[in-house]
Image 1: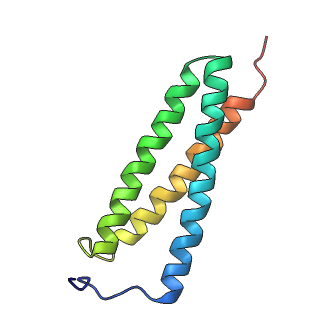
Image 2: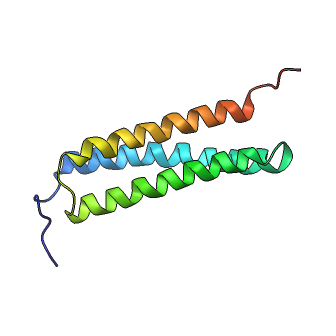
Length: 104
């Protein structure tokens, strides 16, 4: 097995990665679940917003995979973390959109 290009990750870095990944996974899972629930009962646009969250998450997972293999420089870690926070923010906005009362 090849060694990572920039050395292995420390225990602290792994713990931070797992914590941030767990929060992002929780928000994305709930958003997709709520988009499916509201997509079939209210409007199909909710399904498309859930699909957009899933596609951004898949891009994030690919970047994380490349980073862990050592194909990306360490400076990309900030972009990966920023994209993770953006996905959480998008999930919060989507959930507010799903559950906000519709004005009449």
